Structure formats: structure tokens, C-alpha cells
Length: 77
Image (cartoon, rainbow, N blue to C red; front, side, top):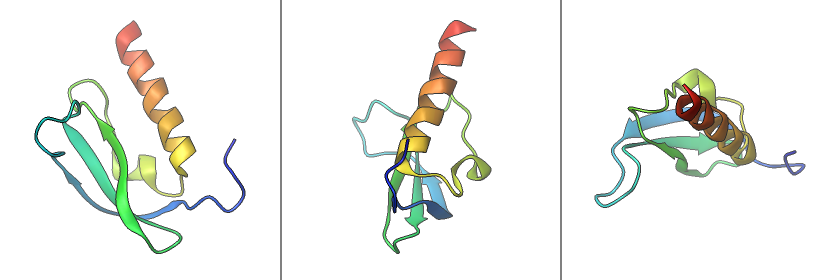
């Protein structure tokens, strides 16, 4: 459950490679509803599919849950 007032993603600014040495292979940089910009999610692109529509309107907690479910589904496939 998200905290009341938790910022949500209002815009996906870009998808990019994370800094070298990271365990993930992609990350999403977004604008949050509180006006801040930053990383919303990191993932391995060959294991999990993430697109802009998956991110818009979601809180950090919801994004963590989405990533967990997709990663679990990939591992069980």
C-alpha cells in the first residue's frame, strides 16, 4: 500500500543504460508529481519488459511491486 501523498510518475523522460558496474542493464528516468526528476526503476532488459505505459501514474512502491512480479514471472517461465 502506498503512503498518502506519495509522488507518482507523470512523465517518462528517458530510458538509459545505468552507470557502469551496475547489476541492471536499463533504467527509467522520470518526472514525479512533486516536480522532482530521478530514477524510477532499474532492471535487466533481457529478463523484464518495461515500457512507458507501465510507469505513468505509479508510485515508487507500485513500481517495486511491478518489477518484483515481472522478475518472478520470468524466473518461473
